[in-house]
Length: 345
Image (cartoon, rainbow, N blue to C red; front, side):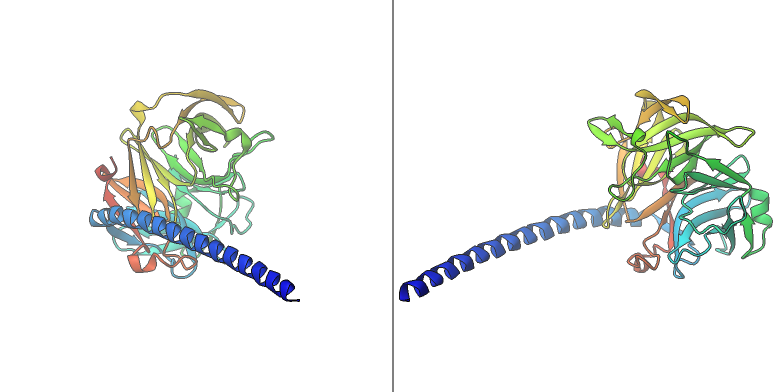
């Protein structure tokens, strides 16, 4: 009996010691992780503080405190106004806001599809190309086009059906169009890739400077039949939320983590065709954009979305002040921020 009790005591003691060792090991791991995360956070905050010192808020984001989650940003110089797209957390009617850049006055247009149905989708990027504002349709593989004259003549709160529907999908390929851009020649559709939840088509995999990337930035023209004709494609990194072209430079907005976002800057004169790709039946040159060939990578506040350059000033849209995230509210991220574009070069 005594021997049995003694053996039970030894067994309990051994198990107790094992659990003590496990708890200590887990505690040490937790401390290391917290310390490492804090180091990253502090480093990011120094860079972000420098960005804030060189930037200013220029235009408040409509309805961001009423459930709106901003995604897309464009500019129409003739009326000196921003066009902002996004969606509502409750998935109600997705809007296009037309915001006067000086007065902050705005009107809200409710988007319908080209078939006249309410559009309550993600409504990602927005870009103006040949007199039409094209809105990214995300997982639908679609861009909806709204003639500018119709947008500007519409009354506040009015529903407006898309005049054009561009399909970026086929039996062998498909783009999840999360953002858009324009340059002097092309309209661009861009993808957001982040596994496991946001995956692009398997054919979009590219090997770039010892890195595998899975997202496209596709440049194309539009035929008289509203069909896209691919012209050039860029392989881009994960978690890209926006792009813009300005005076020989290409900028990417990357939502890196909860601590910060980044602007990746590329000199287009230094980019070279790496390969050709067959995209929607057309063979086009492919360029690789990654961290290795970026001219500069600049830390900015977290949750950046679309970007654009106006008169040598980089304008950046953030979603961190929306109600589902909230933490950007106290940092004035309920505004579009502008910074001298040279800051990113």
